[in-house]
Length: 330
Image (cartoon, rainbow, N blue to C red; front, side):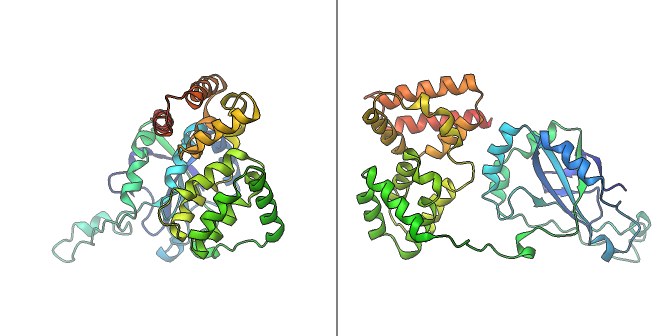
């Protein structure tokens, strides 16, 4: 069969996360992809050789296939944020029963025992259910598959992550200067005093990222979330770093900052403090990044009204933000 093509979406059973199109010996995974990148991947896969289905099981096991579900780019980012909580983000193994048995084998029940029908164990099943796989698959009558290159890109094969060494003294000095200018150095020192050594390392790794040493709202909101943890250990500090550490953080805020924060420098600082107290600045960033210009203007205008209103609390503003995010995810 060709190294790329289409398969019926009905060949994937999302109740048990299994598939019955490819031989069981093959490594089959499923992922989502921005629909505007699908054509490029198809073109690249044309250079790969076909899959020989009449080979021995050991040879079939060397083949890896990815089933792709195209998603609009605005939905893709929302879905990937959910999938990051899985041990293997963006993909999961979908396997069923041994495919090397022929129909004649099942006619000889009196001579041989049927092969065991084993249901694979699903890791983080609740997290998988949070993703609207069924809704996405229902839109497609056929889905694309592509043969993957023999070089494995999986973490467990290629190795482990290594922290890249930088000029940590200079980076931390820039962070300290920026915090002092914002009068946030007492907040950071207080966190450092009550946090564990590992938690302090997590804080420094996040707050020395260049975008944090130039963005007041990112610095304030990150410190506020670190401070919201009753026990500032490595696990809780890492959870904050993961919320703020993705590469697109700040892009949505850059789009909306002129609409969100208005007035004098002091007024803007007060508004940023209030937004940081909601503990949902990453969600605001996500919303502002995916909204069209017209809807972004309306959202920013409404959020600004809440930030300057004395009747709105951080909790009511947080509820508004989460409701807006939930609305976008439907």
